Amino acid sequence: MIHMVSNPKMSRSEIDLFRENFSKCISKDFTQEEKTVIRVNKERMSKVAKEIISNNGGKNPILGY
Image 1 (cartoon, rainbow, N blue to C red):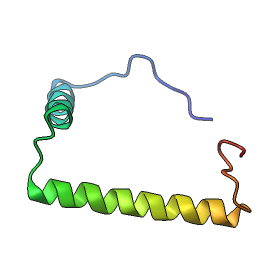
Image 2 (tube, one colour; image 1 turned 90 degrees about the vertical axis):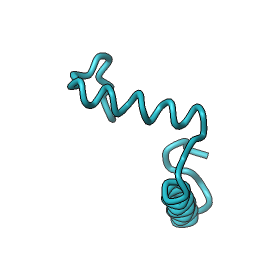
Image 3 (spheres, rainbow, N blue to C red; image 1 turned 45 degrees about the vertical axis):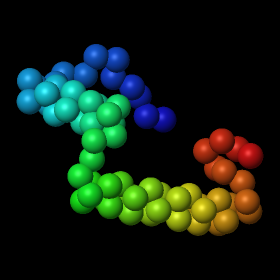
Image 4 (cartoon, helix red, strand yellow; image 1 turned 180 degrees about the vertical axis):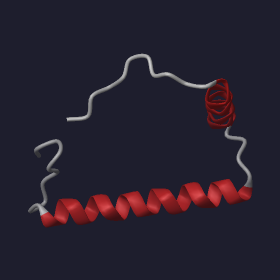
């Protein structure tokens, strides 16, 4: 099980990067290259999820159904 850190230590640059990425997500202000990377990652995640579910008899091993 993955343990969550309720208050992770972050440097000032990490905080600034997080805020920048968060504001981009909210405003959906991505460049064409970023949109392409996001689309490719989504497709890859979907493909992997389908493979995992098909390898487990149609059940999601994490959710149990």
